[in-house]
Length: 308
Ligand SMILES: NCc1[nH]cc(CCC(=O)O)c1CC(=O)O
Image (cartoon, rainbow, N blue to C red; front, side, top):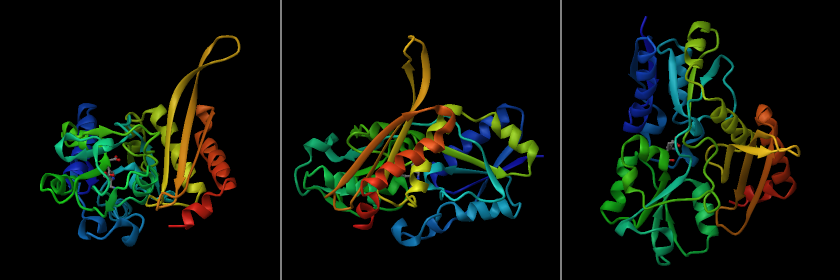
């Protein structure tokens, strides 16, 4: 039986799903891609308007209906609410989580004069860019990566900000003019990670896919998404979060691993940014995320998010 992998039709989606297909085939499991058209592919409106799940609902529906066996999602596009009949059977090793600038003339952010136009539709990116106080003009941006980059090449925009992982996957990482340190621009929860999903009752497939899972990436993403869920925010919220498994040394000089989590909530005009961080056990990642979200809420995160 050939495993049918549902994917969006964009170059990015087909490429990342193709990697999973190839890994399954290499492990002895015949697999093929099935293209599924999603609302996000049919509309050019900002995601904040067309709603959460625009890229993933149609693919999940195809899984529910048994038209496909596996879905490969960009993890950051998945709503935080779990689907009752589906399971994320694998979170493969994460690609670069950083946001990246692609600017004309090979410029880095600091070389863009006030008034420069920077394309992004993510409120999170707009908020954090505005908070830098560089006088940049943030412009809406949608569409596939190719058309986004085209707006810089054509001169319509001075720069765009996109996920570096996407450019790596489609082989265009060389066009990045600056990869942002998370201190400057905190990425979206789960940015750069994939979620490989199937029906929970498909036990054989669950165990086949589990071979592709990377435990440190899963822990990081669980923590980041728990922040988002606890803030009751979605993928279009002005919330950034990044977690990493790090090595620490205890009082007796023994090395052990911990999960380091940072998050930020920003007002869209950049007038306020609340940042916080926490370090804790790797095996309770979601609890760490909830702990950090509670601290952000204590410090006024709900008001800051509402201000957009
Ligand atoms: N919201 C669209 C989206 N979903 C996933 C990626 C990039 C790849 C990733 O984060 O895994 C992108 C494009 C972008 O944010 O620039």
